[in-house]
Length: 315
Image 1 (cartoon, rainbow, N blue to C red):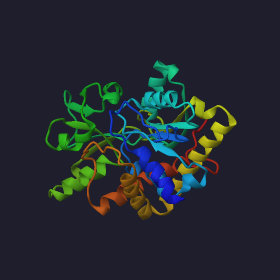
Image 2: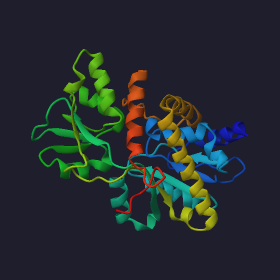
Image 3: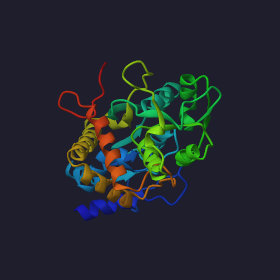
């Protein structure tokens, strides 16, 4: 039943211990599918939320679904590997991550034994936001796992690791001249904040890194990967396929019904109770949520190839 499925999700979505610990069902069983999102449940995971609250996963035969705790940056693959090792009877363990993070981590440690299988965004919405053009010597605050990449792209500035939960505040208070941001999230939030302060929202300087013209190629964003065990036997592959089909059916719903998708994310947040790190990336207005949802959906649409969303192109 829907109520029993939601109870299973609720039971497995709550973690009271340290983030490095993992919980199982009270009877000691492992979930059929475990999911390590690379961030707090928000509109960037609207397809997952729609599939969750509309019982799409359950309709695909997944009755025991576990969402792991909010993950520190750069640890997504290791969390998936740790969970799969600790729960060998779990049929499929998935994670989401940026390709520019996933590829070097996997190259450094192939023993993680994970494989990219789909992507929610075709290209990265990564950008640098500032209150004016950056000058030589300016400091850019970035996520710990992106410092090296951004330093190569911005050799005239100093890129330092900074808390991801307070990045908008850090920019507005002058802690950093620029911040790592995403065109789908922090940029519209900052524009709404500036407008509310009587400032021109267009005064926000945004340097989009992947522009499909001559910028750096950062690869897929919100890429889905799985433990290699998830792709092993026919039964494991069947479960993995069910999760992926459910996720992108969820995205189809989000694209067709963005207002319902916003509500689904709110409901999923209540169900999962994942740590939002008290971040300042959002604006409370419905206008912001609709704008953010539209931007997310535009990125997802770009993954359509053949007759499917989420396809990793062989080229």
